[in-house]
Length: 256
Image (cartoon, rainbow, N blue to C red; front, side):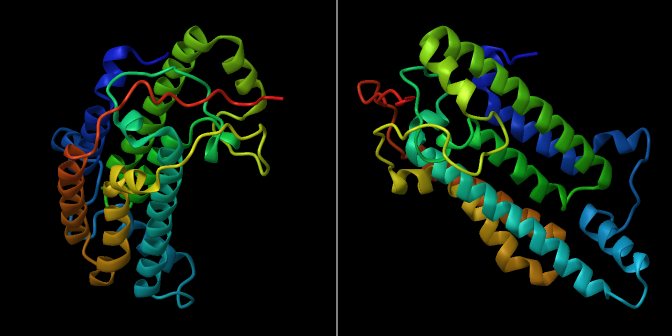
């Protein structure tokens, strides 16, 4: 079930393809699964159900605002978590097409759980799903979740082979997906690089800004256009980020 080296190398493209399929729902041309109309997305569908659930208790505008606030919070949580992780892992390593196993990094969020970057992607998928047709949202959430698990298992096998006992000891102490309330290992002497982390996660921050600033228009198409612009800007920014320098390997974690 673990991801192949090919899947890891092209993981960003695979993520993009999953999201594109979620937004376009090509299967609706063969088997119509979603309603038609300008509000035939999860945002509009859930808002209508909230209003019908308790007639008179909540208005349609309030329902729309409540849902978009949840999406914005998901976008913020994703951007924050991935930036925190990237600051300690290194933005160039996060964006690299190859797996790296120089040493165990147990700093920042990696003291609480092992896969903050992948969890951040899944939370981001929840935000984007609000703008998709219902069948596309279900497909994207399931596909992203399944793909993240494959990537995690692939990385775990690679790091076990590269690092051996220190990594296995780290895995025994630190949860895989659900963070602990307190650090599970001592911090390794890794210095965060916040500016590069913010730049590396510029798409995630751009998506949050779009959710927070454009949602008052109640226009899912406008939100999607803003997210595409954020993606384009982030690709330009990433093109100027420094490449990974292998001599600057992180120090091993202190698991005592």
